[in-house]
Image (cartoon, rainbow, N blue to C red):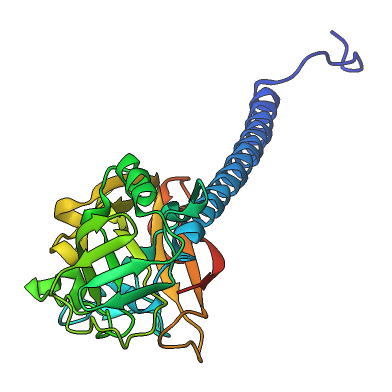
Length: 306
């Protein structure tokens, strides 16, 4: 073969060099594809968890709107010696098991000419006479929800502040903030003697009907499940853990916060509270993370009416 003859093919060294270059380019391409699809997954998960938080907040708003302001408590505030803390005027941010009592709205539905309940009632001694009201209808509605009117209670706005005691926390159950119902007949209720404030001189308004307590809790030990508890009656010495019905609202929740702005009223409604639901975030391996720096949070302001 002549020295001037053109060489054909590659040497072994050249082939190795080409293979190495192709390996590097292929690896970079695979990494780029992996990051691309990881980015898509991360974006989809963030959107999904954001939508979940918004959905949960929409549900919560409907319950908190009708909360009685003085009844709101945190039953396991971190660092609190007694484990119970009144929350509506709290400015600090803590993870809560929030409990409160809401004015029942189901009994306000009209049956015939009158609604089942009317806040404008006239107490006389241990008897309360309703105005343009049908307590039988209210009883039927409440019975359809798994309770009875006789197991319900009335808010005594002339009684002691609600706070922690009515929730039977640490066995200290203060019933002076309630009228517990002893009997129902037509448009007349008989209440128990637990209330020292039952008198004809009371303002015939603001006697909201209570059917159940509500509690909301994030369980980080159970994959971040967010539970709502209902069908427990603090005025009967019941608590959410022992007597309440447990309902799952969402999973992969990191925290549930509630705060009130400065200047909130102390009684009688008109308070604006901020509900904040934080979902678990994703770490660099796309695994669920409880790291607060990675969590996905949404907020909603709610007007507490009562």
